[in-house]
Image (tube, rainbow, N blue to C red; front, side, top):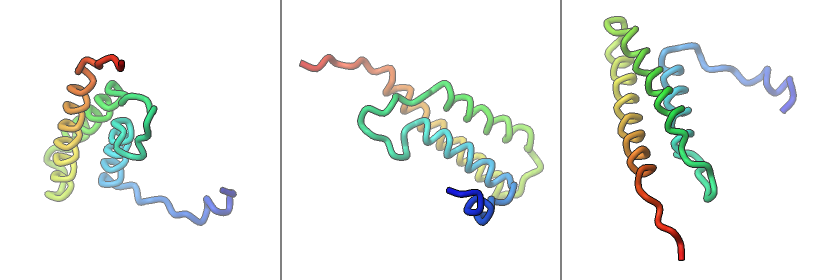
Length: 100
C-alpha cells in the first residue's frame, strides 16, 4: 500500500464506540475468533484479561457520563468477553490426551 492509498482511507471518528469495538476486537483476535487456523498459537489469556480489565476501567471511569446506548455497548462487550474468556480458560485447563 502506498502513502497515497493510506491518505485516501479515512480513519474512523475518535469515539467511545470505536474505542470499545477496537478493544473488543483485539480480545477476540487473541481468543482466535478471526481466521483461526490449525497450528495457530493458543489464546493469549493474559492479554485477553488485560483487554477486559481495560474495558472494565472504562466502564468504571465513565459511570454516570454515558448515554444509554454507550452504557449498553460497554456492558454487553464486557459480558460477552468475560464469557468467552471463561470458556477459553476452561478449555485451556482441560488435560490434553496424547495421540496414539
